[in-house]
Length: 219
Image (cartoon, rainbow, N blue to C red):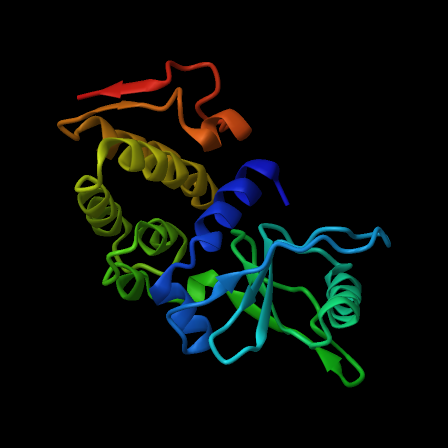
């Protein structure tokens, strides 16, 4: 997965967006588990969450169709079971723009495939958690201009540092839907000054779309 999207989505999902998690699992809470797997072709999963009932949710995030995904998920399942003694529920969250066509079953083994576009953005916009609100940019919307405006309206109420961080994450993800310019135009209308230079995600992986431009929006 492209590093800029990987960093952004993992950062959002590690903070356990309550509406998104409830849509996925029925729970609004969970504990992120940060474990390192033995180096056997793969040594790091995207997300492993322990849910309130003690079960495990393993999620991989894909922005492209990976024809080796079935093999990877099967191996992950075995490695988690070996280390924690539990078989996780496994979900591949597809956030790409092209049609989803990965295989998810072989014999008795299978994992779940979820296209984030099957989730209504209006559900996530009911949340007060900024992680849910930002993820709405990737979900289904009948009117994306209205959705972008609602996302930015909700993010504008955050404290300055958090506002900068989540708006930058929104810009990262908008590139997955070819919405970067539309989001950028709406940000420029906001009566705020945004300086991204100190943002952790900006330092970890610069957005290709804004690389080379000033790290500041002033409206």
